[in-house]
Amino acid sequence: MAGMKEGLKAIFEGKAKPPPVATTLGMKFLKYGDGKVTMGMTVGKRFHNPMGTLHGGIMTDLADAAMGIALASTLGDDEVFTTLELKMNFLRPVYSGKLVAEGKVTHRGRTIALVECLVKNAEGKLVAKGMATQMIVKSAGNS
Image (cartoon, rainbow, N blue to C red; front, top):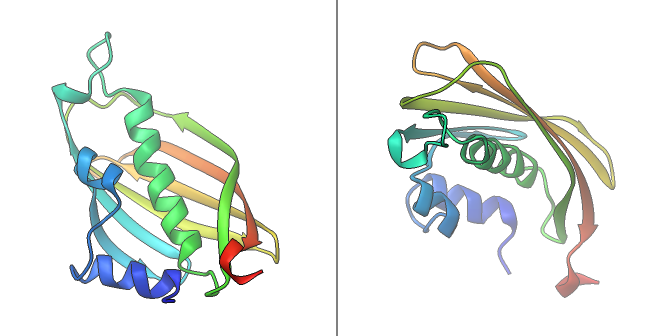
């Protein structure tokens, strides 16, 4: 069975399909490295909340994907993870345009990892910051 790293590499090289949520929301896989990832997404009115700004859940989806992929890039072939806690701080409104999410692992222990994500707009201004606590476990197929 191919490991998570090989699967992610194939997605970033265009040799495998991204997860369905990434396709549905239009997320793009831009850069990938050990414990770090950059993803992008173009947003507009179709993702607006009743106030006419980007719905926070959409931005959270982008950040969550970047953080999850950043951690997944560090996993062994026999490891998987799940989110224990996810926190987002929204710093300025977003209406439309390109967003870039930079996810990185800030701590990687044997069973617990902390990851963070900076979400920036097309001008490079920080619009949100996310942080997640992840639990790493042995995959069911390898126990």
